[in-house]
Image 1 (cartoon, each protein chain N blue to C red):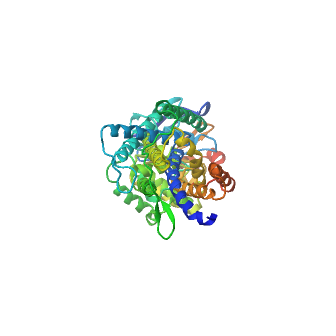
Image 2 (tube, helix red, strand yellow; image 1 turned 90 degrees about the vertical axis):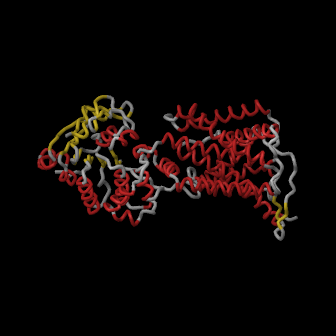
Image 3 (cartoon, chains in turn blue, brown; image 1 turned 90 degrees about the horizontal axis):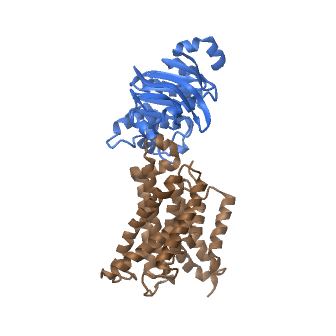
Length: 234
Length: 307
């Protein structure tokens, strides 16, 4: 069953069109990775799905309802969460406050989600009173993912979750992504350097210059020689 | 009397004017951090609050609501009641100005918003002048005798102690709001990163309304306190203080309400102490020089923006 369907979406900034009719699909509970070179339109795709950019053509359907052009604060209520690549935390707030903001739209108790997130990232529990602005890149990424998980989303979108992280930290983040997915959350990842990500993915897409180039299972994309040479650094 | 012996007294005056500047500074800083523009109408929002209080106070007097002085203060229940209503009404008026004007301009650059705030400033000042005229108005015409604090030789009026106490209470309340309430945290989050706030599901529109409510309430309080301290109000009341308030905000670190408190106190005290050495008329120049020096040395201000 398809959870998210992006159908021939055209989008960009102002007059500058970046996506020229991109289509992807994320099944419920699956991990999907979108790879492609710098400027392929990967971040633009995520921003458009989440309503930060308005598509000029095409449809976006989530959980069997059309969400094309819906504003971010409404998209979040439908059960989608998004972690941008940069500036994905509130630096002057503490870890705990960042997570609390993740639950902003809830009126009832959210201590269960909080416990689950502290279980997933134990280091955050020890640092819950620290200001996130003073923390390391890896810790910030954990806070950003934790914030996005506070609403028990059906789909978690991660924009380059391992960018600028040391290899061991990146591996740890990917391991956590698998754990999150195991709890039933579908995951859409955008990566520039994507071997790790494709290994865990049920499905992968290659974008280039704002168009779909390849589409296959993660495994097959990794094995595909053209994809390897052109987009995975040989 | 030699210059140095006057300094303790000037420090006290500095704390009093610093209190009023701090309240104004917090308001300017909050609107800047959430809405991203310098609000030139802030001074006139202060005057608006002071005049609404004046209007309500005359009304209350005509309804024979008692205003017998409370203890050593020069005013009584009548003015306090008028002030409380004026603070609420100013907050409502400021939210309306946002709905009518700033909201429509929000998607343009911050320069457009700043220019439009100058328009609001002129409009408000002229409306006040239209109804009340340019001449000074008095809340209370009675003259209050300053008390001498034994041992220190410092003179202070009970009304001035009241101003300092009100400021302390409001600073504590604003701090508690920002630190402990859900809306306060959402305001800090929105100030940190507006687009992430929207992605997180924070209703940034409601955050903006709250920002204006608090900004408007603080403006009215600062305006009324300035009226109590100066003994009279004119439509220029806030405009004349705006430069010092901006200097306080820049000094403390623009967008940081705690910086505005520090900045307000430093500017207030420096302006008053400077009168021991140079003529009183140069007070705004002192604020201006401090602001320029701060911008040259550390543009992010004393407390900077936490990033």
